[in-house]
Length: 234
Ligand SMILES: C[S@@+](CC[C@H](N)C(=O)[O-])C[C@H]1O[C@@H](n2cnc3c(N)ncnc32)[C@H](O)[C@@H]1O
Image 1 (cartoon, helix red, strand yellow):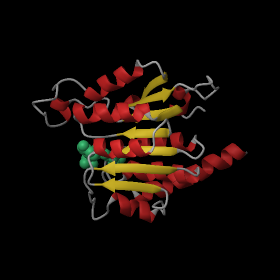
Image 2 (image 1 turned 30 degrees about the vertical axis):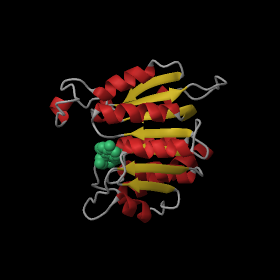
Image 3 (image 1 turned 90 degrees about the vertical axis):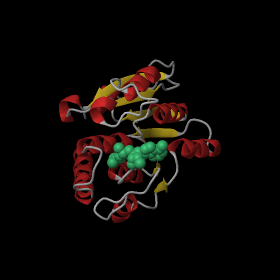
């Protein structure tokens, strides 16, 4: 009974968020729903998003974090408007500005260096990486986020399938035109000693893949397997 009520409430909430963000790029709405469900699994979740752009995913991350008594920190190198509305406007409309702090106009590497010098240790429950499409920025940011994930925390990568020659401009100095650097970074971090689980989602659902890494629990706790969380089987 409680489960039924809970899922009814979260469907209502998702409908409300979908209405606020209707037509706003970039993260696919189904991926936003998944992010919402994942954040909802944590108690007082500490969420970090890099980067927010128009605030589509930010809205869902912040709504789930607020329900669970948590907070969101996000950044973008610029503040963008989609049909006259910024990320801040979306959050204001959903009454989420109190628990979500966005820093605009800062490079993600400097932003994280500031954040992690202030807050050392492992404190992030979920981080969403949807960034620059350049290896030099994404590699530092991914590793810095991973370093500060809590045991049991989940690091989410958008753009496993992003290949410069097919999906965007090639930076001639630094890119490998036919290689997805996000996939390579994901594979690299997957092999570190403190990774408990690795999975991908989205190929069948929206023909674009997101990568998920969960940090090992110190206790080896009995968490729901990541693959069940991703497929709503928990
Ligand atoms: C694909 S968008 C993010 C979309 C967002 N997650 C959503 O759900 O709509 C990528 C963003 O990364 C930002 N970005 C690129 N390089 C950056 C950097 N070095 N530091 C901070 N933000 C950066 C861009 O300005 C852009 O808004």
